[in-house]
Amino acid sequence: MQAAFRTFVRLPQAIGRRLQSTLVIAEHDNNNLTPITLNALSAAKKLGGDVSCLVAGSNCGSVVAELSKAAGISKILVADSEAFVGFLPERLAPLVTATQNQFKFTHIVAGASAQGKSLLPRVAAKLDVSPISDIIEVKAADTFVRTIYAGNALMTLKSKDPVKVITVRGTSFEAASVEGGSAAQENVAAGNLPTDLSQFLGQELSKSDRPELTAAKTVISGGRGMKNGENFEMLYSLADKLNAAVGASRAAVDAGFVPNDMQIGQTGKIVAPELYIAVGISGAIQHLAGMKDSKTIVAINKDPEAPIFQLHHDKGEDRTHTLMWWPHCCVIPNVRTEHTHSCGGCTAASHWM
Image (cartoon, rainbow, N blue to C red; front, side):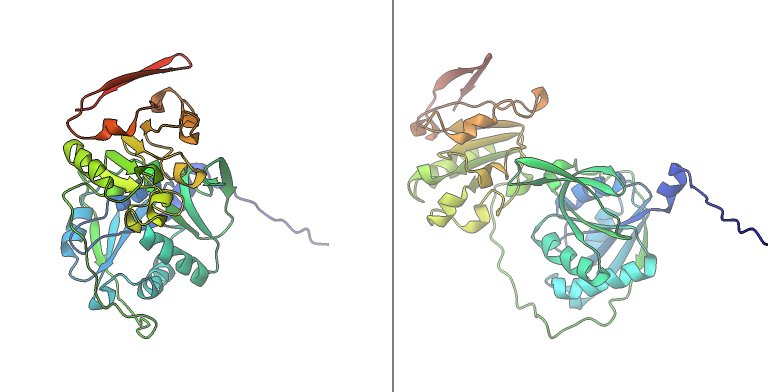
């Protein structure tokens, strides 16, 4: 009778990390990187192993040059073709899956932007894995944290899929430095792309001297309490003085005060500026989900029981929220006023110019 022997080998954790590899999908406009790409890159570095980036576009050489300076990238894969004008997800998804089949990455990462949310679920479906959306923390190479119930609860999930397809909330990760890197470049073929599913016709970009909403250090938002769209001119004037971006609640957007690209919240844009000023916003759950990670929050509301005031001190000392009640007239430019509000042992004061 012959004895059968089975040998089990457990690789050290450090070796396991070396076997991991991550592909970051670079988001850009063919001239410059979108800031959320650098946030996604920081998240990718926390996964361990080699990090590669895929740059797909048309005449996107300046983007490749910019990204190659970022530290921690081992290789930049470049797909430069007219087929990627407009960054249509129907054309990008086959490229990403073909790249995955060639290089066998263990993780595919993109920012949780409109582009990332449109692209990666398609990629996950083609790879027959479950997408992992909008993570805010990396605990391990297979374990992640994301928010649920409009940001009122945190869920820790562990994925057993062979390839983890992940979108990253940009405000939860510091932007990677674009200094000190010297990544190698490699061209990848566009391959056979579907051309009958969608066609890029063109786009009209609005220009503004104010910073982009999701990247601004100061954000001023108005809600239904602004009464009408004309009153938002007061916020625009103040934003110009503070070099701030202007946002809005869903109620203000639904009322037609401002366009929907200004909406902040669970179904809008997620922001986490150094200073968030909420004017006439009571604080619906879906709006709080989009701005509750702001470092300092100033609320201007005539209702002292507004839900937005309940955010006070819920993030600890390093993210203390300064919340005040002021009449709306205090936001009129060139009016100087001071108001102090005490709340549970803290005192907050501020000045308007």
